[in-house]
Image (cartoon, one colour):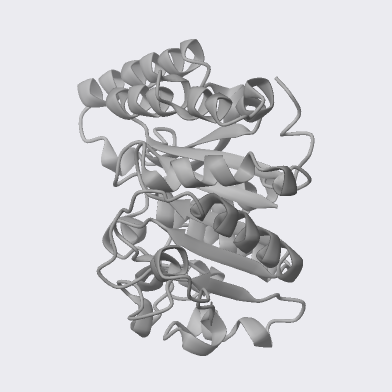
Length: 306
């Protein structure tokens, strides 16, 4: 299965949420590959706390795979991470592997040459044989990375693979509009995919949304200091819900809702259960949201046509 994580804007929590999804699936016994296709800012290594890949690697990253025809480097997080959470994965009964395919250090966006979609398809097929799940973290916006995977997944050799899209956005009017444009706009996913040979209905059914940094007004009372402020927030939250429903981004298409968590805002990292129960520096609701989202990736009932 291929999971493509995308967003129209930066700062949506796309990468840190995707990394935590990958970790949760590995805990459940799956072998997971995480591909850093954020070519303009390949920093997934920083979230996984892999020192040699914090801003990508010096050679044989995904940039080099496409532009110089090298092999794509694979870094097992249990061997290369400084995080106790990830180093301990092999010691957890039934846990699988979590492997990072980093970008190149100081890499940037690059235009797509004629051979790149085929190389991309070859990479996905190779990883599909090695891993249970591949999460592909894409550059924000209408990027070359998005164009590349749309070209690759339209190819005949990938028709048998399951591809799903998660569109991340913060819970604001501007972010909702931006995410809607990324999917439904004239140059959005659906029309761009159709131009490359995708069935627009099938592609549309493969898209779900993830809201991030959402304040739960029923729980986070300390974030509301005045009655008037609380009343306004509840009214505006309802307006955002109505806007999302109108734009076909409502609850029926909602894959997950990640609550606001100070730990995530300040330290974008993989969170484990000890951060909640032991150190008490993360919130249980955050871990539960990651688990729920990770479970939905393979819940066929959730992905049935709408």
